[in-house]
Structures are given as structure tokens and as C-alpha cells.
Image 1 (cartoon, rainbow over the protein chains, first blue to last red):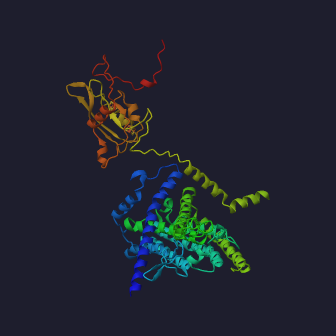
Image 2 (image 1 turned 90 degrees about the horizontal axis):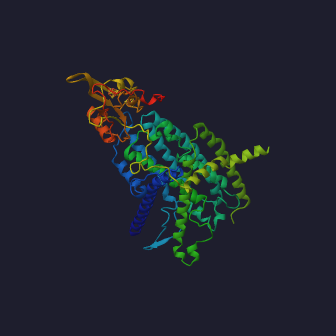
Length: 357
Length: 181
Ligand code: SF4
Ligand code: SF4
């Protein structure tokens, strides 16, 4: 009984910390995105709230919190309220299996814990894929339940887009899974230890660089970001699937989008870029003789990789115009899918010829 | 063949996209914003800026407007309404008894200013005229005179030899050919 209590308490604490970090990152991202894009376009971005506008996310959050919560006439009330939650929960729930740091175990009251991953499920990546697909339901239902043509069109586009690119994400990942021989994100990351030439993007026997490119493009498309932001194409569909949403429900969609961005960045870091592993063997702090504090460096490496990836999202958004819808579909099915399939084929032959030890 | 290969290479390496991304990154690194932080800093207006309209006075404080209605006729968007009447006790002299401008419709073309034969209208450099109630933009004569008073502190002298009943017509004043002598 005591053992269970401690375990539950520790897990809850972990969940709280991860949620806090994710939501803080979302807040930070909303500001960082506006600032980075503004700088790229020779603007200043938000400047009014706080010095250089750094308190803007708080002001935005407060504003959204106090906004009127409008349900349009003729909307399906139940689904209209359910949709934002359906979008947000899968985006946050994926973080349960992300390893933020090394696979250490800490002993507390005679019970072992892993501090840097909430739960090391042995089908981690499958779990994430499954849940992110549920997120698409939130978008589709939100678009349908609003009783508005713009929302409906946005929802339909989101459905087609998320499903076709979800496939590419899954197939791009398969190559890594073949090499690692595991579905657990912790095991996959551990297999990439020992320098950047062991990361799966560069690794022997077959570098997953093509898979990485496919993954990046599909991840951008899956999170509905520019240049694949057709579901919320503001120049055609007002705001796409969340046209009719306001207040906290809109905020839910917004948080879901940014949480999804963080999630796909975390997956990219863990699968292709070596997760918490430094690009050189071991860690600097470990070499200096403090192996107990090596986790600090490793967590920093993980965060750095994730943020580089997030920066790429902003960078793409500042650079590229939106694709046309048929281009998007053709690109997904006729270009990305064959590359991903070919990558699987070559990787499996390579993995067969050079089996792991 | 080589051309084709080159084009193919450009496609698979996303060459065009990379060029675009290089451009945006360059702007990020050489950050030189062109934003003007508007309420805190304002741009200098050009001399011929066409801002808020105003009614003007002569230096002795009398209104210039003679109620001729020409501005109302010139205005393309029917902003102006002049109700002209005789000056009491002076049957030959007229003035604008009431003068309204519905600034919600004004497009600041300046035709009314050009039309006025006595230069009674002026365009100021005021532009911060956002209001919460658009009825506040229906301006009456005292308001327009007040705008003129605060924007044009230097007033035109009333001509000495001008009979008080005769307006000084200067319709084509600025287009007059120079005198030969
Ligand atoms: S500026 Fe043009 S639109 Fe405005 S009142 Fe004068 S004539 Fe009319
Ligand atoms: S044109 Fe000039 S003088 Fe005539 S009514 Fe208008 S403002 Fe007055």
C-alpha cells in the first residue's frame, strides 16, 4: 500500500512537472514565434507588454480567459465543446513516453523510479502515433459542429491532410525502428549513444537522412503549420476549423497546435537526432569527473535539439507560402510515400546484411 | 542532359526553398526593423499633408466663410452641408449660418479647399481622430472653427481695401499667369 502510494505520488509529480514545462514552452513559443518571424520580416513583433513585449503571452492568456464564450446558433453544442478537448488531450498525452533525459533510476524509499520519463512503455512510439491520430478527430468534429462552411471546409481539409501525412510519419519512422529493433523511445535513444555518427540520421548501416526529411515535412503537415496550413488557411477560410471558436476553447486549439509542435520535435530529437545523447561520446561533465551530474548536460542537449527543430518550424513559416491543396495531396502521396517506402526497403536489406551484434 | 540533371538535383535538394530560407535567415541576423512604434514615435508628415479639415478666420477674428456653397458642390462624397443666410442688418452680405461636415464620409481629397473662393477652408495635419461614437465625427461650425484656431495660429490679414461686403475671390489665384510688365 505504501509502495503504491509513493509510486502514485511520484508519477503525479512527474506528470505535473512535464505538464508545467510543456505549457510554459507553449507560452514561450507563442512569443518566440511572433518575435522570430517578425525579425525575419524586418518587424519588431510584440513590443508593448513588458520590456520588449516579453509578457505578451501572459496578456494573451488573460485576454483569452476573459473572452466571451460564443456557441454559434445551430452548432452541435456537445461536439462543439468536446472538440477542443479532443484536440488538446492527445497532444499533451503523448509526452508521457518522451524521454527528456538519460535512462537513470533513482531509488526512493526502496522503490525505483525513472525521473526523466513518465512511463517507459515498450510500444512508446506506437502509442504516440495512435494518440496523435485521435487529435485529428478534435479538428474534424470542431469543424463540423460549428455549423459554418469555413469550419467545415477546414475540418475536411484537416481530415484528409492529417490522415495522408500521418501515414508518411509512420513509414518514415519504420526505418529507425528496424535499426533499433524496439518501439520504446528510451531504448531507441539509448541505441544512439556514443557520438553523432551513431544518431540514426547518420548511422551505419543505412543513414536515415531521407526518412528524416520525410519525417520533417510530414510533421510540419501533420501539425497544420505553414506551408501546409490549409485547414486554417486564413486567406481562404477565415481561420479554418476554429473560425467559430472563441475564448478558452480557441485557446485549447491553440495550445494543442503548439503542444503538437513540441511533441513532433521531441520525437524527431529522440528518433533521429540521438535524443539526450551529446554529439560526442559520453558527456563533458562526465569526462570532467562528475558522472552524477551528467544528466544536466544530457537534458540540455535534448532541449537544444527540440528547440532547433522548433526554430525550423518558425523559419519555414517565415519563408514559405502556402501550398495549393492538390499540390499538397500529390506531394504527400506521390513523392513522400514512395520515398518512405523505398527507405523501408533499403533499410531492411541493410539491417539484414549487417545485423546488430 | 547536364541541365536536366542539374534541375533534378535542385529539386531533390529543395534548392529553391533553401535559397528562400537563407534570405529570411539573413534578415534575422542583420536585424534592422523598419517598424515605427506608432504611439511612441510618429513620422514626420510631408508639407502637403491632407489631414483634418478646418474653417479659418481672418486675423481680426471674423469668419472667412461667405456661405457660398461652392465647397458643398465640389465635395464628391457630400460631406459638407452649408446653410447660408444674410448677415442680419446687412442685406448684401452672406455667411454660413450653419456648417456641417460629416467626416465619416470625407476622403480627404482637398477639393473643397480648392473650391473655396475665399480660402475659408484649410487642411490641418491632424490625423488622430479615432472616436468611439461615430456621431462625434459630425462636426458643426464651432468645432471646425476650433480646429482651425488650434491648427493655424497665423491668420490671413483681412485686406485693408476690401469692402466688408465683397469677398476677395481667389479661385484661380495660384494658377494665374505671371504679369508681364
Ligand atoms: S476633402 Fe474632399 S471629401 Fe472631404 S470634405 Fe473636402 S471635398 Fe469633400
Ligand atoms: S466654399 Fe468656402 S466660402 Fe463657400 S461655403 Fe464653402 S467654406 Fe464657405
